[in-house]
Amino acid sequence: MQDLRVFVIDNSIIFQNTMVQELNKRLPAGSLIEHAGLPTEALEKISVFKPGVIILNFALSSLLVQQEKFLPLLVKKYPQIPIITYGIMDSGQKTALVLGAAHYLKKPSIGQPMQPFLEKMVSTVLVVHGKTSTAAPPASPDIGGGAVVTKEVWNASQPVVQSPQPAPPAMTSFVTPPANAAQIDLIAMGASTGGTEALSAIITRLEPPLPGIVVVQHIPPMFSRLFAERLNTECKLTIKEAVSGDVVLPNHVYIAPGAKHMTISRMGTRYMLECKPGAPVHSVCPSVDVLFDSVAAVAGSHALGIILTGIGKDGAAGLLKMRQKGSPTIGQDAATSTVYGMPKSAFEIGAVQQQLPLLSIPSAINKIVK
Image 1 (cartoon, helix red, strand yellow):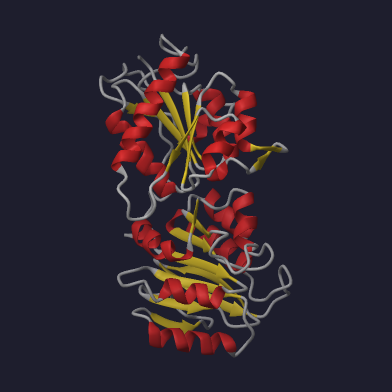
Image 2: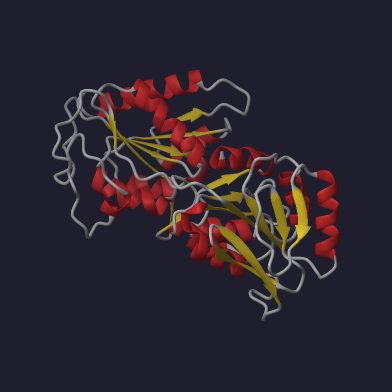
């Protein structure tokens, strides 16, 4: 079974990376693995990578892409490629098979062992690949075994760069540069309706050492100060209402004052805050987009962006700019959002790299930053 190509699609960068690493350990030597977090990215890569098997997080199957649900679209575009789906609900199996998946595997819940699931995934990959092909799948004319393909190569209009080296005997993975390769020295967060509770749930669970954190919560003047003062009594980090001229210090959290937009600028190796009144953006001041735009421009890939519960779409465009600059990004999921508006808008335009339940976000911050 030479040149087995497996494509993993999961919007959680943590689980995506875990799946790729574990498949690397278990699949036959010479296998190739590629991965994507978003349907649009996946479609671009699949057309070039030409996988023999697709592994899909079933949670992405109903996202609309090109006016169709993602899983049926994959089945229609690539009927010859078996698709293995997985999800946390037993009830997903029937739907997955009806939509055209070859298999549905139950993903373990938090606290349950992953080993049986991963072993089952590998055996299922080998079974479906064996059923669909008794010989090696045709290699892409653009990509040779052992090549390392960077993110830029997936642009269909660009030539694919091949490694001159022969394929190594051990398994090779086609990889894109990790989104959080740069050291994170700033965390930017945005929230609206339900955000004070969400921010409290996250920040009270964070411990030093951490980079400075800047926060926009849609909140009236005076209440932003009271909110910061309350959080400061509950947290191991230092919390304050931001003022113009503040230098962003490690282990400090700066809450944007009500009725003032907050932006960052660089002062040597540190960041400085500016807070000033301005025209409402998305009908709000402070605006998450205003903060995220400045973070994307000034901090680039050295910042982590997080968007939480809230009405509307404030922050979505700014978070996308951050991700385009190389920042890792997190969005709160629908189940734990008071209002799944802002994180949904961000997710739908591809700004959210991993979508998580509220109480999973603190540990994700630690993993990305530390």
